[in-house]
Amino acid sequence: MIIVCFILAFIIVIWLIFKLLLPLIYFKKITKLLKKHLEKRCLPYELKRIKSAKYDIDLKTASFHYYLKILIIKRHAELQINNKTTWELRYGIKKTPNSAFTKRQILKKIVPFQSTTFPNDIQKIVIVYPNPKRIVKYINESEMIIVDEKTDIYGSKIITPDKFSSLK
Image (cartoon, rainbow, N blue to C red; front, side):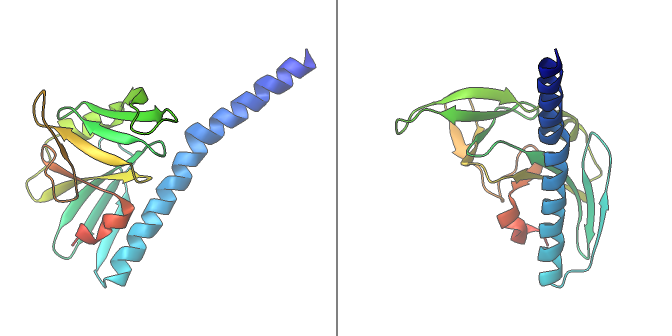
């Protein structure tokens, strides 16, 4: 009975680490990288963490105002954008080259951010961390494009920490 309780406690601790602590560590790392980039470019900025379902960071620079949403994804995954509010994470490849992804996860955290209409002077940015294998967007049922930091995704842009240079 004691062993079962110990195993259960161990599982709960591991779950807490992966669900609560790891996203917080990633968030702090992204914020630190963002501040470092802005200071390196000598951009005056005001950065506020917002505890909201809609967005995570309110960033004001000398020339722009951004609402940033941070998406923490699995390593070696592909981000697939099907429409404005349906974003899918595809991961888990087999050992053979060019094999398909075996697992899928719908990203529900993006829905409030993408569904909300913000004032026109605010730019919506999604920061994806860690860098995905690729980001694709479906144009129609049979066409897709590779997304970069300049691609418009239904009124927002997607960047990774190594593309912070697109922020002005």
